[in-house]
Image 1 (cartoon, helix red, strand yellow):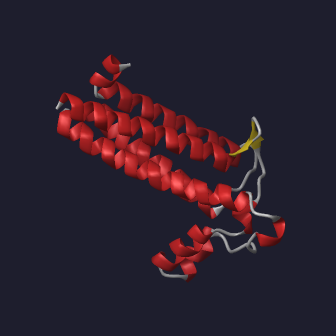
Image 2 (tube, helix red, strand yellow):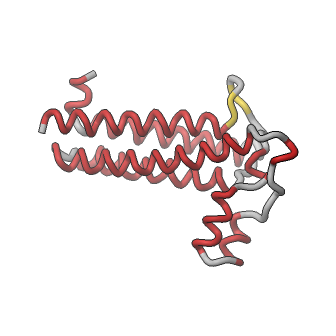
Length: 168
């Protein structure tokens, strides 16, 4: 394991492919299975895309010690933001039915009708759309799988940072 982490390109390439696969599943569920993503799902996709871009930079550039640490920290930050968004959706999905907020407008409307900061705040509060579970795999919702993946990606990024620090 330590040998794998010593080569900076390989772990970043694995993370890149991992995120590409997750995004591919999301697009498959949307366009082939007809599941419409809620605003929190779209924000989670953006976070996966952010992790993918950072990891792709690491895979292409093969940064050395300090560069790999910085890239790992940024990757961990984006993964943690994604985990927070997914965690919010998981929380909404486990609320009792009488506590679930009303369904809100779609992300397109929010971005058109409100300033960006207000639209983002509204999305992060969540709505009834985000509490609905349309699909499960092994008993877990998409949001729960996203949370697990964000936590794993953030953990891998933390290991990359700590290994780079130890070898610096």
